[in-house]
Structure formats: structure tokens, C-alpha cells
Length: 167
Image 1 (cartoon, rainbow, N blue to C red):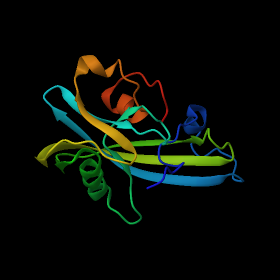
Image 2 (image 1 turned 90 degrees about the vertical axis):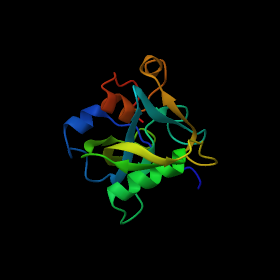
Image 3 (image 1 turned 180 degrees about the horizontal axis):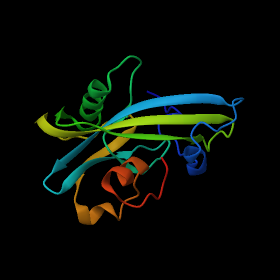
Image 4 (image 1 turned 30 degrees about the horizontal axis):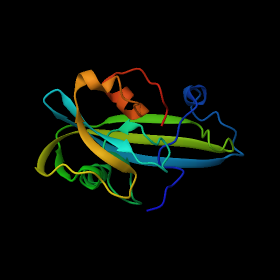
């Protein structure tokens, strides 16, 4: 699938704090996404964003945009399998993250993203890297390694790390 500019946007925090205070003459884009937060001991499963996609090189949770009409739970399970080769099941309620603002790649676009982050556990499969898609590496990352990696904001927010990038 070719790179899609609305896959991993950055956000303007000031606009997010104002809610829907963006000018109504801008094109508005809403993105729904679902992710899995999967731990193995103290390690967390992360994926690196592939070259050619917004956020190239950032480490993110396995997950991504929902297909039209797809339930967030089904999307999270599908995305984990696609990006890591692992079969996972949801073990609890999601953390819901909502961001809005101006899309930095096109200031005429008002953007709102709602992300469902589900706690999950692995129930099968074999860890592997996704090929020719939005991520190119999947790995179990230990706590002492996390702060040395460039993290997507979804990881920073969920793991309570400082947000350094808004992708």
C-alpha cells in the first residue's frame, strides 16, 4: 500500500487545547486508529515506522488506522498481526487519546485523531517484521532502551514519557 499522508500526523497542541476552535473553512480530516500495548515482562512491543511514511524512524505501538466500518477491537488485533506476526487478545479497556489541530504538512487541513490503545497479550504467532508497509521492524524494547529511541507520541503518552515528537 502506498504511503498515505494521513497515516501518522503531528498536531498543534494549542489548537488541541481549544478543541474545535479551528477555522471552519479548512478541510477537516478525522482519523480513527487502534493500537495494542503488549508487554513481555518489563519489555514493551514496539514497531519502527518505515521510510516513506510520516514519522519515518519513530518507534510506535503496533497499530494503525481503522478500515471503514471496522470495530476498534478488531482493528487493533488485525494491526498487531500485520505489523508483528503475533496473534494477540485484548485484556482490558482501552486508553482513548484524542488530538486535534492543524496538520503541519498542510496548514489548510484541520485534523482530529482518536486513538484506542488496548492492553493485549500474545496468544500465538511468531515475531517477524512487516515487509513493504508502514513499519519495517518489530522488537521487544526493554525499559532502559526506551528513552534512547525516537518515540511516536502515542508511545510517550501511553508510557508516561516526555513527548518529543507529535507523529
